[in-house]
Image (cartoon, rainbow, N blue to C red; front, side):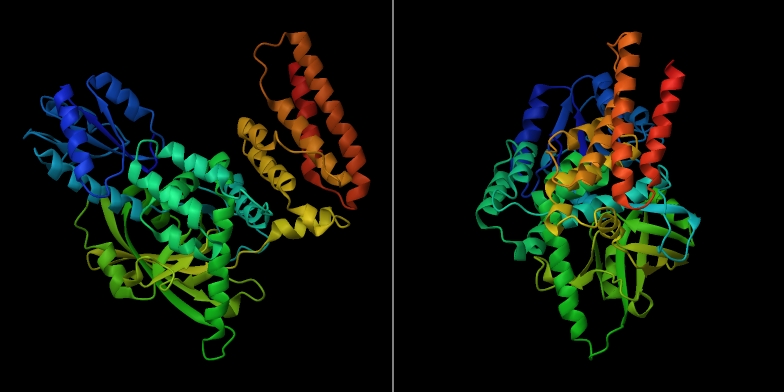
Length: 504
């Protein structure tokens, strides 16, 4: 099972060659990526084509290197490693020619670390905005619901109440499945299970181990079913950054509103770089925790000097955080040097959900400098829930049931019907009548939109009418209780009625 943002596969000719790679893999310290081996070129191509949004590193073994130009045409293939000298047309894809399996794997390990460290998970608004207040921003890769979904997800995860025991059971089960057969990482997972404390969340997150890779992979893929299992570690990291931020800002000469200048140096794929370069003046939401530093010289080292062009651009981020512009809403970030495993990096961590205004993109020496200005991030989900459920006890607003309900609504709005059903199927009866009506409307909406391929036309019509009736009854019950007009539920009814008219 892959547990990285980077897939590694090898097209080889003999079982002896595979055995040699396995033997050398155990000898390369820290190499924990599973390699998918193939003897048939067609099967290898099929595997690569099945990869979505990830980067694939391909090893061409003996007697397979003549296929280099064919594999160079596949969009997911990022680098190709040749084990024999071979003529090729696309030099941008060929990383090196190394015949020794040990040397090749060491090079592979270094490249995987570089690609993982430079992974940037973001969304960009398609319209020019100056502030986030009261506006919705959108994702250039999807539509405007993607940005709303990301923020709703984060806010719900942050508010979800922890159980009293077995807090990380689901997360650890997921991690053990991902690293099945990897003794070193399984040992780290066991250590986490025995020794983890919430005050050490940042320390665990910054380690080069399972937690960083698994969490970032889930966030990159926006896989809510996996992210849900990591909800409490996300909470712990966020809250620890928040606590450090409060402590550190109190100690800045007694000034309450400060301006900070942070830097990040990294390599970016041409596609990622173009998304930012083409959207100056737009907002960019960071969908994971973002590592930065107060020292520009460190960022310059990490960015490099364009040595990996044309595949990768060398980029330096400059992020200005002017707290005097935020009012009561703060940007959550902190110097985590004392908490991090890598103290020499002088790391400042920006919390997941940070929103930046892209101010400029300019060449600077052999790199590009991208200037950002941080924008406030308001907790709208909590405010809206308090409005909808004014008489509901605080402890009931963000219990596990309500959290699943809110995320289910976001998933359904994005057309993720199956995921919405999976996340909401374990919701129990609510004590609050409004919450119960919201639950009925959501589950009826899911059932309404779920395709039923085995149903006859008559049964399908009956199913649609039954779910529409449930939605109408719940809407009538919830409307007077809420004290204000909520268009989201009315819109769902109108859509359902139109779908029934279409099917009739």
